[in-house]
Image (cartoon, rainbow over all chains, first blue to last red; front, side, top):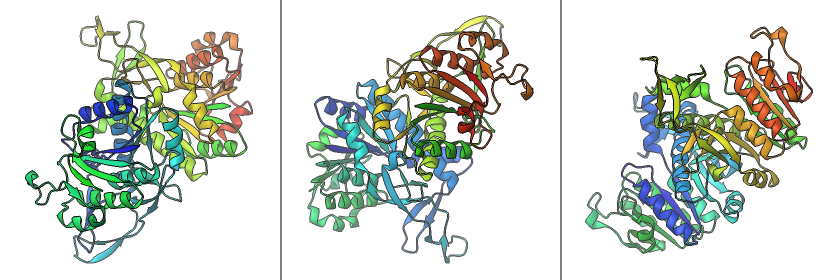
Length: 269
Length: 269
């Protein structure tokens, strides 16, 4: 079993990645696809007159502020558009894909971060922000995935989760992929984005780190820029959950998944 | 087994309908929910700068022109927003709902109307329109629905289908509900909208037709205004597929589904 995370980032070659996924599935590989969609959510939020808002924590981390309107736009874009397009594309390639989000069948249950401490940009002071619809996944209900896989379907998972109270939540797609990989006992988690892997000196691609010992993955956080931080955290979580190997690889190239499985990229094991 | 079609129309009381669906499911009823979303697709298409376009056939029928951009907006709104909100709401009510569109697992296969004859509004002459992503459902693959229902999930279906070539298509939600009802061998199909049923003199609600003999359903097309025509066609298809009873009922009231099952509305049997 392999979990493939396809970044929503511009530059990832969706057609090539899905073609590659289809080849592997037809060769008998069991695959679960997890995808993102933050970038496109931002673009459509702008078009809908509800531009994305970002908040900064006292420790300097920047994250999306997901009010209810943003949550609904995030659901539209990730679950309605990106998920449907990936499923459609896989169906064209003869793969019987089924799209899901974590709300469906309570596939991904998350704790809602219902009060987050931020720095108010107008005063520079700390304050609590309460109506945020973001969560951290705690449980993946793998029974639904197992049932679909056993029946010959390929699950394609959008990064929404559900709270114990039943609220849909925006979750980080890399960490969702990690939790899914752990839940389905995947041997490998391939995280594709628009860089060749973890770079010692971002953005110099010649400084690619080809291997990280699984015991030292947290230390490699120091090299992680921006969104790569979440990928490193995801990798760490997946390894803790028993996934043998996490590979950060280039999603812009042909045969991206096969190349990653051959060891191209940053292999953490 | 009952199939409940929830109109996307303004006025349908989503909270009351889903509450009622939850009560019935907890009482042991097996239900598949099918929903629409044309109205909200129109609104969001406008906001995204791609206003809905309608075309008129030589026989005077008006329908949506679904170019590829519109199809993607339709998928976003129906599968991403409306479907997610219904699943979220059912989850809050303790029902383990799973959202699907007809693209997932090839649930609904449709023949694409890839060339439609229209009256060109600028010339008044007939011409063929070719890049339309609309379809007529031919097959519902009930195995996926049966598997989910047997495992205790409640399927919630968005009105997208897939062509033999693997293209996602916009389909009429009333006729999708009819095809689903036939495929799952439902005893009853409840079609909720913002009117109390089929009216002899639309919009005079005192002229409600309370019963139509199943042999005479096509004749009742003469009373059907606008979107009600598709509902009558859907009813006719469902009855032909072996559904014993189709009920057009008021979705604006409390206990809409229970009332419909008690015979309030237009009962076709």
